[in-house]
Every structure is written in C-alpha cells, then in structure tokens.
Image 1 (cartoon, rainbow, N blue to C red):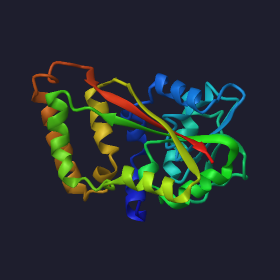
Image 2: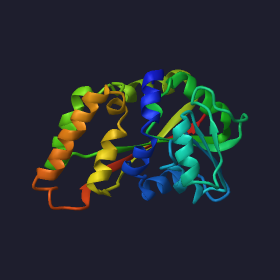
Image 3: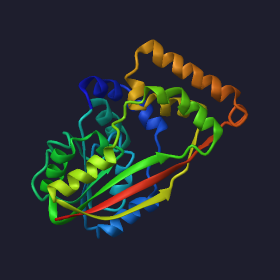
Image 4: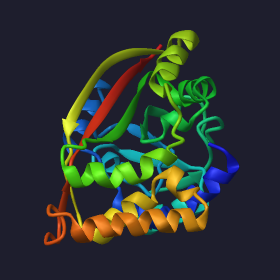
Length: 251
C-alpha cells in the first residue's frame, strides 16, 4: 500500500469501525480448532485495524496482542479494546520476539503485504508448533441494491489483482508454511443507511479519491439508498458476507 493510500485509508478509521463487519464466530472457532489453539494459547492479530477480529481472539486465547501500522486505526482500536495491547508495526517488521506466539491471525489485510517479507516475519514470531490463519469477509452481491451501490465505485477499484495467487506462490517459494484447509462461513450484517455510507467510505480506493470525486460518488449512493425499493423504507439493511478462512501450519 502506497504512503498516499495509507494516509487516506487511515483517515477513514472511524468509518471503518462503523461500517465494516466483525468476523464469523464459527470461522474463528474453526481456525482455533485447525491450529490446535485454546484458552492456553498466545496469539497475534497482525494489521489489526480497529480490532474487528481482535475481540473474538481475546475471548478464546490466554493472551492476544495486536500490531497495526496506522495511527488512527490504533486510536480506534484502543477506544474499542482498552484492555488489549496494541503496538505500532508492520507485517514486514513485526515488533515481537522470535517464537513468541502460537499463531498469527490476519483479517482483511494480507493482500496489502509484501508476501515474502511478511511470511518470513510471521514464521519468525510463531512458535515451531504454531500456525497462521488468514481471514477475509467477502461481500456477496445477492441483492440488487448492493450491486447498484458497488457499481458506483467499482470503476475506481485499485485493489491488488491476483493477490491470492501471489500469496500461495510465496507460501510455496518460502517453504515456511504448509497449507492446511480452506473454509467459508456465512456472516450476514445489518446496517443503517449511515453505516452503509461509512462502509463505502472505508474502502481503501474510495478513501484515496480526490475530494470532489469521492463526494459525488457518495451522493449518488445516498440517492440509491433513498430511492431503491429495497432500501427506501427500510431502516436496517441486510448485507451478506461470507468469512473465508485459510489455515496454515508452520514448518
């Protein structure tokens, strides 16, 4: 992620917290089971953002530490999780001791990492018997209003392409982790109209748009919400996600 995109994305930390979903509880349970974790485990939430995943980890592990590079995201995190430690750092330079955690979790972020550097760092901080879980909340455009909203911003999409292929290639090339299993779990969310707008504002490539372009796009989306038959008379809107989980064992 470029410095300009980081700065723009960091500026939407509050919107991210309001509009983004948490992760499927079943998905987190699945990852703990596959990585043989439990209430005795010590885990790291890498690139934690505002802590959308961290709370679920803290409920299941003996200790949970978060690492996040962006200042405003750390501020939002500390307000949401005042009893969980968070450190400034990146996936390419994790500020933790070698072999200090049983597993590293990454929610909605690995596609922004330098995969080789990140895998080396994750391997370093993970115990020999440990593992890694990568999670993404993937939107399902099963409703017309959702499709129309994203049609307004998709032309601006700069998200890295082929990131899954680059990740798996890096896993194979480094030889540091063994893929274990992939699974997906339903993760529906209910949003107010305001939270839908916040959700859109929190999209990295939207946050980086020139101010007038971004404002015009958000105005068009607001118009869709106010006029579409599926949304205009509905206070709480259903947005459907699935939580995708990729589990790996440390080699």
